[in-house]
Image 1: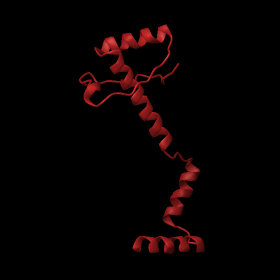
Image 2 (image 1 turned 180 degrees about the horizontal axis):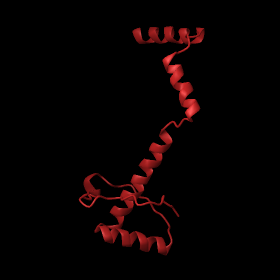
Image 3 (image 1 turned 135 degrees about the horizontal axis):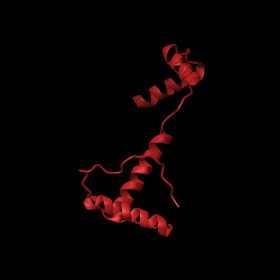
Image 4 (image 1 turned 60 degrees about the vertical axis):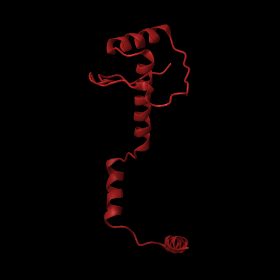
Length: 111
């Protein structure tokens, strides 16, 4: 069973239009869930006046986008943030390996 975060986050704005068939939809996702979960999803979809499929796809895609975004961010402690910003403000001199890599890159780009 998939559990979503709690809270009062709204999945749809009152004026949001459901256009699930706007793009080619030929992929399937089959899930097993409890009768209670199914009834809750059906109730929520009914309250919004949308199909269970539209509600489910929208909710799952929105949650997936949030998860991907959350894991795509680099989170730093205050200490690490300060170290990172200090390195940007005052970068160290490039070492020999970095200089050699820059030369190789410049040669490759010119070819």
